[in-house]
Length: 357
Ligand code: ADP
Image (cartoon, protein in one colour):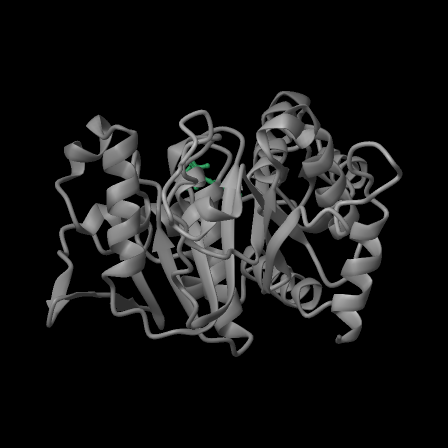
């Protein structure tokens, strides 16, 4: 048994099951466990007569495994008998089959979800400039715009009106400023995005993940829709994301939404890597004086409270907005600006956090 297996076994042996002082290992409750990219997927067999224990057991397994340094997130499926897992029928209707699980984007070392609790906090601006900044520090980077309800990538990268082409039967990413990207905005008409419902959103996300000729590399940056909806759940099912970074503005009301986003990622077993403060303060282009329009520092305090890393902050700057609106993001169009330097620092920091430094 390798050292990690040994550690896992010791953790699981501490979890009691039923009477007589037995534990879940002795009682063969753990049917299988797979660990990939620090993400554990566990199948537990809890027979009907022990059904009342399942919540408690699942919570303890999750807490115990997450306590190991090698494991960041834990996904638990519960079945009533091994035959359910082995596909021999007897599916329990009270316990429907888990949703389709897949592991797309395996060709990337890191899949980073850029999220926000609500719209308008600059999530897409951050996702795009962060992707360009990672590229600038020498990484291979792709970008997927999963904001199916309001895709901004075509505008911000100057790709409005371009349509995705096929390479054989696969969708071919568009290369812009060195990023390979696919946006739902380049796959459909602009006004179509607004009428999508959950299952359609899931379908299009699956198309972008499964049917695209992604080149692979060090980073895949995914721009999520704001909030806590279907797309987040689809991605949790369809990829083994390295984790999410949550963008927010520093004032309390935005942080409340950010907290909800963090709680949702926890529920779907996606680790939250850290938080980013956007629109931190306004720096006057004439005199350089700083005005904290939305206050400043709130995100850093919140990241401490949430026990996640603080990845960096970006001020409100006209150059950032102009770059986004003109299809030439500040990191590419104005590489010597203070804002571009902020994004590069953020990229270095994120890379350091991910490499465990
Ligand atoms: P979200 O993806 O959260 O809805 P966007 O990235 O679309 O937000 O940004 C909303 C608007 O705010 C855009 O016009 C964008 O150019 C602008 N914006 C975002 N961040 C900044 C910033 N740091 N400074 C100035 N304008 C910004």
